[in-house]
Structures are given as C-alpha cells and as structure tokens.
Amino acid sequence: MEIEHSKDAPLIQELRTIVEDGFLVQGFKSKGKAVYFDVIPRYSHEESFSRVMEGLKDIEHIPYYRRRGDGYRLVIAPKIGKKRELRPLVHIGLIITTAFTMTLAGYIFWAPGDIALSVLFALSLMSILGLHELGHALMARRRGIKATLPFFLPVPPPFPFGTFGAVISINSPIPDRKSLLEVGAMGPIAGFIVTFPIAIVGLKLSEIAPITDPQAGGIVFSMPLILQILATRILGEIPANHIIIPHPLAMAGWAGLFVTSLNLLPMGQLDGGHIVRSLFPRNFKKVYYGTAGFLLLMGFLWPGYIFWVVLVFFITKMNHPGPLNDVSELDSRRKFYAIVALLVLILSFMPAPIVLSELAH
Image 1: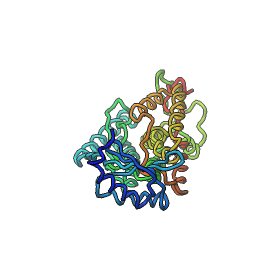
Image 2: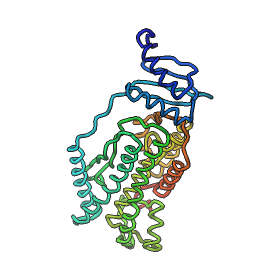
Image 3: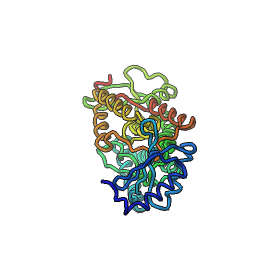
Image 4: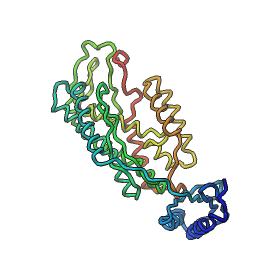
C-alpha cells in the first residue's frame, strides 16, 4: 500500500537529503513503510553507503543497498525491534548444565568409570565449541555488530556428547559483505585451531587394538581427512584387523571437527552459508541447493545428512537476507579467509561419520 504523501512527505524529503549525500537519485517511490531510491554512487560503493548509514543513525531507519539489473537500488526502512539478550545467570546456568551433561556423557561413553577423564573430555569439547562461537562473537563486535556471548545447549545421555553445541545471537544487521564473510569464517577457523592440539594429544594417548569380536549393531566413528593424516603420523600405519581405541581427548577432537564440518556446509544461514552469500550475492541459492542435493545423495551413506538438509530448509528456507550493503566487493584478505574456511571443511568433512561396525569392515 502506498504511503500517503501528505503525511510522510517530510520524512521522505529528509531521507532523500540523506541519500543524496552519498548518491545521485534517479528516481524513488514509497511503499508500505519503506522508500525505494534508484541511485548512482557519488564515490566508491563503500563510502557512498557509509555516508547514508551515518546520516540515518539518529532517525531509526536502516538502508539496504542492492544491485538491480544494470543499476543500483537503495531501500530505506524503519529499524526492526531489538532482540533481548539472555540474562547472565541463564548463560552461567547453561554452562554449568552443559558441563554436567558432557561429563556424564564422557563417564558413560568415552571414559567409563573415570571421572577425571570425563571432566577432561567435557572441558576439551566445551573449549572447542565455545571458542568457535566466541570467534563469531568477537569478530561481530569488532565490526560493530551487536552479538551475544556464546550460550551452550545441553542434552543428557543417551546422546553421546552431552550437548547440541553452542550458539550466539546476532542482534543488529550485518553492514557489508566483508563483515558477513568474517563473521561466518572466524568461528569455524577458531574452533579448528583449538581442535588441532586437542586431537594431536588425544591420538598420542590412544591405543591400537586387534578386532577380536565385533558386536553386531555396534557403531564406528569414521575419521575425517585431518585425523587420518594425524593418526598416520602419530600412530603409524594401522595393521589390518586392528582399530584405534580413542582417548577421550581424541573423541572431543572428533566431535569438534564434526560440528565444524556441519556448520561449514554452504547452505542457508550456516557458517558456510554466510561465506557463500558474501562471495556470490547473485548466485548463492544455486550453491545452497547444489549442496542440499549433494547431501541428499550422501544420505545413502549416512541418513543424518538428510535430517540436516531438512532442518536447514525448515529454519532458513534455503535463503539468506544478506548484509545491508550487498554491493561493495570483497578484498583479497576476505577471499583468503574463504579459502581457509574451504580447506577446514575439506579436512573436517566425513562422507559417513557414523556407520555400523559390520559395514565398516
């Protein structure tokens, strides 16, 4: 519905004056609560957009800068209400509860009867997941984006790791493609960096044992490429009919790599989805649906990928709103971050993370 001109003309004129500080206005129209300006940047895309952002900071409106055919469009709309953060006591409660459920999982599955090793397992996995999300949060705040601190999601056994991971909440729009890529990439990169030494120590403390009597219906945790490389370097070639008995630290490393690989898959608003959205603002959906199709095929090896695709589709509809400034190009440093994130995905990804023991031999 069109805004009544007599009522909103002063606001539209104020918005136009702000826009003209950074852009030449070729035309505009108002619809609903938004005003659409067809524009030509007076300066670089980044500087022109920054001038408009600065002009709007005191009137509770935000700009969305997009390519439109061969030109550019700037949409000015009111700010959406701010999200509320969790209270500090809730954060603390979730940390304590998750530490308990992780320790319990370690005591049952990875260090049976050994409370000290169970606590070590919990602290190691919490460090990996926490630093992953802290990487997102710190980068967001560095780029002027409001973000909560990480909060953990506890889940008791029989879930074998005691948690569904950790998350943060982004409470303000992401300003540009550079910020979107940095926020998306820094979490998994930080998590991978801390996983590396934990996995190395865990493999050094692991044992190799002969397979004597595989239990029907038992499960085997496959190793991603990085663990295969490390295991060969640390433990040597594994003899036929032998298996690695993982130390709890090795399983914490495995879980960290598994979470990292799932988050880096380029779909929706996963970390990998943020990265692809920043790299390919016009063609990101092709990558999203291509990845979904690939994972559905991989579901024949591990059905969990089918669940993951359905969950991401249900939550994000395989879409991404993008940053406010969707036009400014990425520089070589941000493209390097994307390459590092791709390398982390390759080293962490497992075609079949969990298989039945009789199918693994």
